[in-house]
Image (cartoon, rainbow over all chains, first blue to last red; front, side):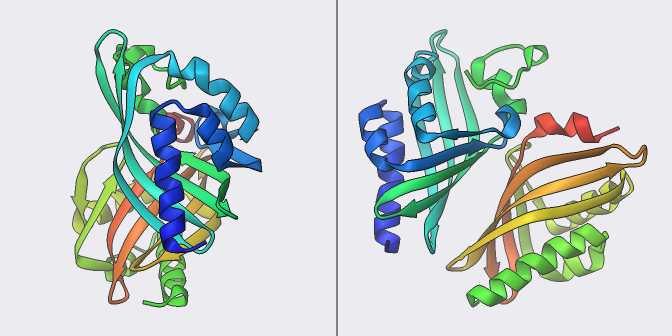
Length: 137
Length: 125
């Protein structure tokens, strides 16, 4: 895949995630796609597991936008740095700085490694700092 | 810089930190170097970072930067790695991190580091 194709795939992925188009995400994930996070115990999940969890995840916030996207591509993938802005149902606005490394093949994403800071989750949710838990919902 | 030069710079950087060799790290940083981390959201200078590295080296018996997966792009590299720590009490802990570096003329001009501060407590004792 060319630099242009990888960048387009990356933005298509984030636009679909932001607009809650799970069917589009299913098209973007390769059949053997794996998703891993540096939080949540570091467990790998399949693309199908990730997609199945999204509808419930989307109900947690009124709106999420994936902004300030800085993309660099390399042979077989991309790294994107971005700000996740969320508006909670309470009206609270929070932000997380996140980095994702995506591996790509034949126009699809085969692996996602996501790096974030669980210490920011309480502020993201609008919770008090002492309510810290390793969950972004 | 070529792919090979960027990879060598990345390894040289992480190897120097692993050894606690702040002198070499200082030589790797460009004069206008800045480091940003997602846990603080602020930028710091080379001198500020070097002080943190020197102070931090005394906190643990050993710190290694393992499982390095490096990819290079025009003007920089990204590396995914595990930081494995052995505390003075002998306890072993680890965290997963990723950093993106912008490079120029054989030096690192900027680092953006992403890690989970929720893992800090496990490695502090």
